[in-house]
Length: 186
Image (tube, helix red, strand yellow):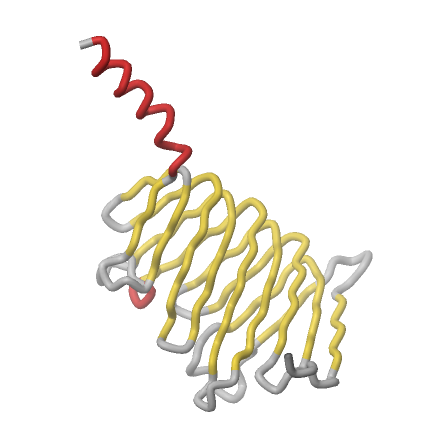
């Protein structure tokens, strides 16, 4: 009996080390974290979170942070297609990779204090110490810094839709550095 109690207590203390994993039924959203809480329409996570979302066959987003809340719409499960919103906090790193119809990859890497994803508009809003590095499919490099950035992740963006916006503070403003030279092939 003492051995069983000892093993149970040991398991309780060791289980946060191994972490937990959640995957949507559709397989398009996966969350790894030290602590996960699952509700009917909400997923909450804490400590060393890694979120992988596959928007379609050619687009993947990977987010690392320390606090997360995913809210599903009333229409279904916590699949990418049914997300109401996602809230990311505490050292947010977002890596976005997309491959166009010709097989050419474009990607960006951003760092910020927090981020908010709106499932309806498919906008990702980064706030607090935002730093973004982008490499387009034609090899163009761009870096931006500011206090807030908005990225439109919709594949169906219309001609007048904003794809990217950055805002600075009163003292330093926003910084945008674009290198229009092609990146050498590796």
